[in-house]
Length: 475
Image 1 (cartoon, helix red, strand yellow):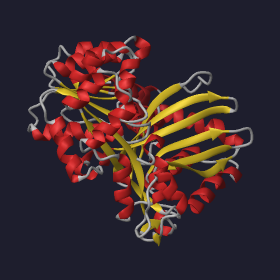
Image 2 (cartoon, helix red, strand yellow):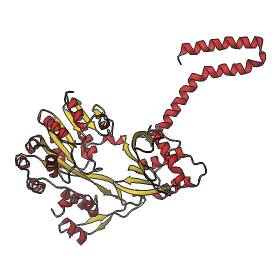
Image 3 (cartoon, rainbow, N blue to C red):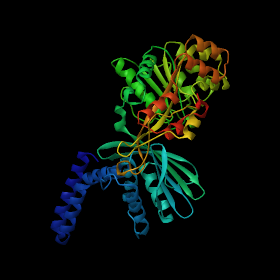
Image 4 (cartoon, rainbow, N blue to C red):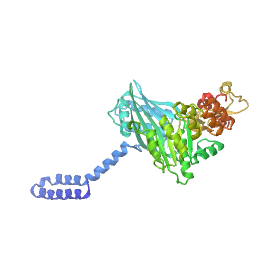
């Protein structure tokens, strides 16, 4: 409602009020209240809309909490089970704030017949946090659907949404996925902390030699750099840090485009595009269109099919730097994977400049870690004699929430494609032979880098064994 309209209505109401005062004095006070309400209505509507928008987007919540231990988190959440009229927005706000403050990467709400299990994934490990009563299941689900702008009355098909939160002066994005199950909708929320966008290559976990090699690869004007690793191994973080480094290196003189499914972080000065396969906008379609946008650097979230692979390889050979991911068991297995989906090995050998494999290891809590020797079982699994070396093991204390670990760090290996490796790729050589050839030519493997972290006391041998690809044991 604009100002002229409000003014005209106010004038009409004033004239009406004067008429009422003359002909019906008893109605003066009700009429005056009506005029006041009418005049204030635009302001009241704007206030209501602002409060509704803040409530639906999550906002800061009604209370700000400090970091609670697991036992206190459990008791606080489960206390809502006994409340007759529970404050569901407050409950959901507490669950999300504690997940963020405890550095969780994901929140799981898993419905069962008799309860809903709340779980946090912290440092890559899922932990049970609390149980909600079955009477809270639909209430919590609907609250999260409202916050994520999903359809509340749809329960029989998957839905996705996003939530913006502000926790402890930090802006946090939540990617929310709803999945129908036997006992209700399972909800998984990926927590994306925008404050982590300040990361750089130095903080990821590369050795000095690896950092120099990786920087040289991404600062080249053309080529194809492939990252490899399982889900949750930090590939997206590495790619975003690489794009930021390229942008800074060129003093923002580089045109960078990304194709992502989904977009995880909103990056400044980088053109990001969301893939919508249900609408026919695939990686291959997006890549074809993107090549007409005069890009210098292209990031493709994942190569899944032959069309995308062919266009990506062509882009890498025609004056573009292309960074992407391919799923395989190890770095050397990427070339076999591309051959399996139908890509010509000679084209792969010509386009790909390097494959970077990575995993994430948990870092030992410095407050409570303890010295320990390597066990015979650990030596057998690693295929190496480790007697005479000092290692450390997790204990658990208040500082690390009784977990023994605090934070994670990347472990990398970089397989560079030189002339020797290129010939082996074109000849369809097995991944094991490719791997051994790369090691002979100076590649440091993930096992060596993992042991380096264990020897320095940053992580434990058990953690190295947990993340180590089985095919590298004994190498």
